[in-house]
Length: 151
Image 1 (cartoon, rainbow, N blue to C red):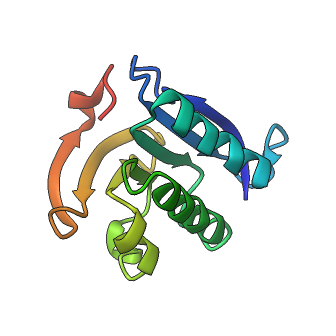
Image 2 (image 1 turned 120 degrees about the vertical axis):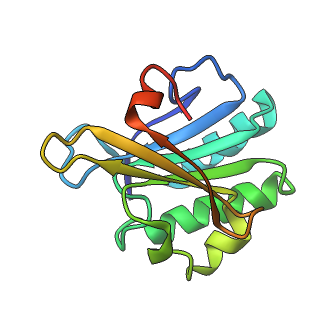
């Protein structure tokens, strides 16, 4: 799995207790290979900075090319934080395609389904799903409600 960024407050919303990894699209020349060093960096920041939420976003986290590493990241964070860190996966694919994956029920707390306009590739809406609600659709935002905010 390749990534382009690992940082605090990944969506620039002034949320210093958030941390995230942005996955790279295939062929992105500015990407780096995810290794044990990056996993250590994530765990270090979670322990030292009091991170409460971890986001996995960018190129589809649950694609066949990424799912192995993503499940490893989720499992490791949950185990090392005693379950205290909430994990959110952001994907353009619908949740029902992945709910069968065991790690979703064991290690992921939130799933944000991003829908894009196929003609403009602009974000159209987001749907939040939570494990706590049994993976029921908790809320949906239309793109007009999202302008200037991160949900």
